Amino acid sequence: MESNYEYKYLSQIYDVCKSSFWDNYFIRINSFFTTPPKRVLDLGCGTGLAINHLNCSPNHYIGVDASEAMLQVAKKKFPAFDFQLKSILMFNQAREFDLVLSAFDTMNHLLNINDWQKAFRTARHHLSAEGYFIFDVVTQHDHQFNWPGQVNVTESNEWLYIQKSEFDNEKKIACLKNTIFLKEKNFWLRFDEEIHQISLPISTIMELLRYEDLECCQILDLETGSAPKNSSTTILFVCKVKTN
Ligand SMILES: C[S@@+](CC[C@H](N)C(=O)[O-])C[C@H]1O[C@@H](n2cnc3c(N)ncnc32)[C@H](O)[C@@H]1O
Image (cartoon, rainbow, N blue to C red):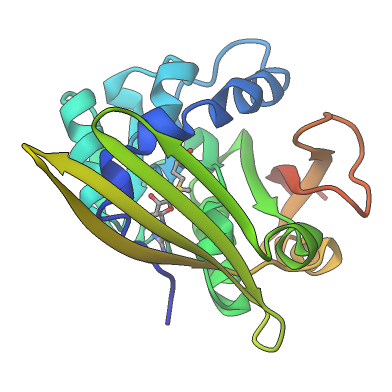
């Protein structure tokens, strides 16, 4: 299994439920740029939430995602932008970008280490000499200790979203079990879908990056903006092309 990227039902309520993630994310990313990055490659772009924050122009943005449902939402919101239905692992164009981004757990969706390596290769291949590759990962600590048994419920008049998280200790795979009820006339329709994730130790991620000639200039706890601790839940990696 390369990754899991259905998001068939979650896509319909994704922006309402998840867009607050970007408030903090944008503050962290923004601090690395004196002027906003002009050319942006958004790997695992989802519904295109990055566009609102990064102020990119349609000519200089490419969003790549393997979920048709997520891209449908993105295209509706940003019809002038270039969204490509493709796996990150297959994306290959003769273009360079000032920012290659893989935001909000996208890397964790790749379910084996070889695919992480391929994704880093994609990022490196499209990164300009002065550009930044920025991505975040959910930590092993979070998957293992915080996810098991966690339940979040969000609701509106039109939908109800129950998110249960689990961790399979044997396979080392984390799972989000999404149950979504959508109101249709006088009925509630129920949809279920699962999203799987893995996490890797920071040292392994650093090794994979080095192998692809990517230099990690900063690693931050996404929440605090400080150096990561053992208890950190999400870590932000900021990388550049390695110079000798
Ligand atoms: C949690 S969402 C993040 C979306 C967006 N980056 C954001 O900040 O809201 C993860 C996204 O990664 C996409 N994804 C997962 N594996 C992928 C792959 N191999 N290639 C392309 N997209 C992938 C999913 O379809 C989903 O849209």
